[in-house]
Image (cartoon, rainbow, N blue to C red):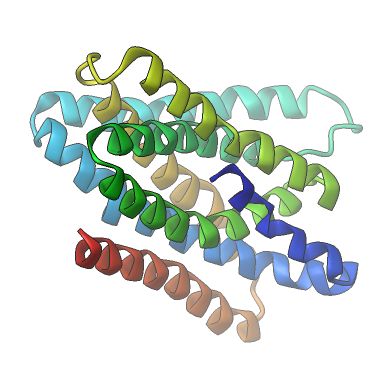
Length: 238
């Protein structure tokens, strides 16, 4: 699962100028993938565990508001660091959000294998299919946020290793802590929605060139479409 994050290595074979031109399209792909992942995968799973009552709403609103506060803090730190600060706060936002999501993926996969190895295999396949387009998009966001290609690959990989920690936690404590998984699902969904709606889509609106509008729309649609495909495959395999 963690090795899936290395799909961003494709960028190493690209010329820098070409890679810069692709960044906005990768951001578009990330926006579609994050929204699709939140609304088609994370939130339905959270509702299945929590229902649609007050706890679910509080986790969702708390996660969204929490990431707003976090970004405010990061922006203040970023602008107070002087002209040498080159890394956009969205880098930290993406890595934190993706880290929580990967932690949860590891927990879900381990719990599925504990329940039934065949269920574990299906879950692993579904998660990998979900992660590939998202990791490519995340890599583009990290580049857009100011990281070099090498640092983006390393940071994305380290964030992805949270899946190992998640699996170990479940194997250690089992599934006895009720409510933790549902809370993480909801907060992770909130972070995905916040990043896509508050950071990525406004960034796409900065580009005023008409010729870039259609490719961006298509890339967002591709990200959403891939998440729909994963959902259909997961339902079929289940």
